Image (cartoon, rainbow, N blue to C red; front, side):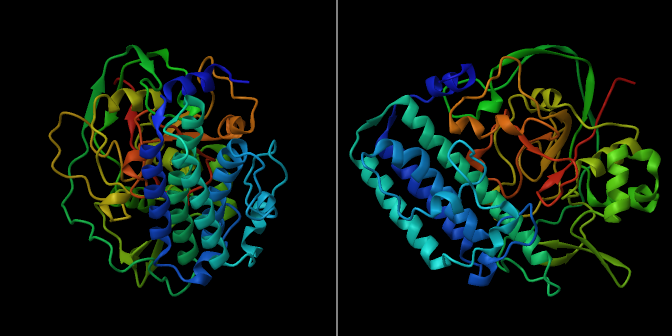
Length: 433
């Protein structure tokens, strides 16, 4: 059964050229495998924490999606490449069937990495065969394929996030790549405020291009006057918070945040390391001296909120962020820039906020809840977003590991408030003075 949100998405997914979608399919699948080239077989098998997944599992799971939701429904008498994969690589789709426990994905030493690449190749062959047999795809099938491609792009950035956590757990601090583009050195720009008048405006996705169901329905919302910082908070500014005993002052923290500080002994952002009196930051290019002008990264919601409290400001609401993004071009520091690290803001023209897209996902103070009129589908695809709309916060804007053509200004990412292995930062907001 199609509910209003998913029905609107299917309608937006215009009947597409099978050849065009096939080209996109092969391109995105190739990017995923290219991201794995710097990794050893051992790198691909290890799970460094329960929230992360081994690279090998990512490779198989996104392939499982195409078997489950595209090939099996569309090909008569379909036979799975391997029946055991239906359980091993199902993530959380309860309507599809049981899943291997998430914290134990790192125990799947078999099937081998080579077997997983063979699995991908065989499913790719079958998808090509399916699409080659059709000149046009209807809206429903187009949507399933588009969802699968966007799902794979999500796992591309998750793969890099998980690899970063894995390599940071190694006392040798090995680099994922030593040939990354160099993050440009700039003196940075002063933080200034952009003011916005309260008004009634539209929020959510519009148009015929793909979006996730949590970006719908488009609806009116009423906003109050607010101001938004011109750029992301940088390492030097966050270091000042630390020097002012920010991690030792309970009055700055939400109650659950202070509990996390005490229980987990937080003293600095997640990938910071202090050696011989100097701060360093672990990056996908290895351990590097902390750049004070670079945006502070890998903050939990609690840390972002505490910093905002320290400055007598707050985090933006997601509606405010989307309004400020306005007509900004989808441009910035994304996966294709090949820095894989946030870059210093520079050259501000004062007209619009910088770094609104790319560099880091930006925490908002908005809980991840459905838009008015949203109902998730009763099918298994309906489990993609709707079931997670509790106890999480929305992040906006994309990051330096996000594919450029994956992001939209209406895109709603979400994480639990205590997590910080993802590429998350903060931008300040404030109410009228």
